[in-house]
Image (cartoon, rainbow, N blue to C red):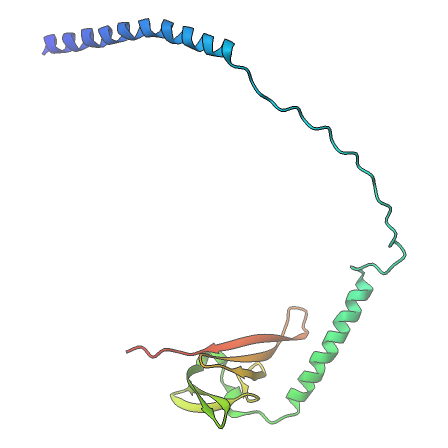
Length: 176
């Protein structure tokens, strides 16, 4: 066992001694390559002169002014408030007592050229058309396609204002 470890050590020493001779040749080649290499660097372009442009709209209305923003918000709230007043003055429909996530669209049909959708709510089927109301957020059906019902809801935003929000009910495939 001692003889094999001694033989392995001598073999490793012989290999290292053989490698040192190649280093001189490698160093000479590297030095020659350094002398022959000529770098090709393109000269830098001088920077372009900056000509400042005078701002001529200083007297105009500032696009981000709070006055302009408040006028736009008041106009939008008037539109939504008129929608909300109309919603509060009408009689509620039966499907407005259920949240949208408890409803599932199970089909669609065309009667006399008008699209109707079939909804399942509490294991009962309902037939709805464009203009009917759904859900607890004053949802109004605006479009019925083969695979979805598109509606707009009136919800309260973080600032306490009523805003319109689009919503959809997708056709549910029945799993077996």
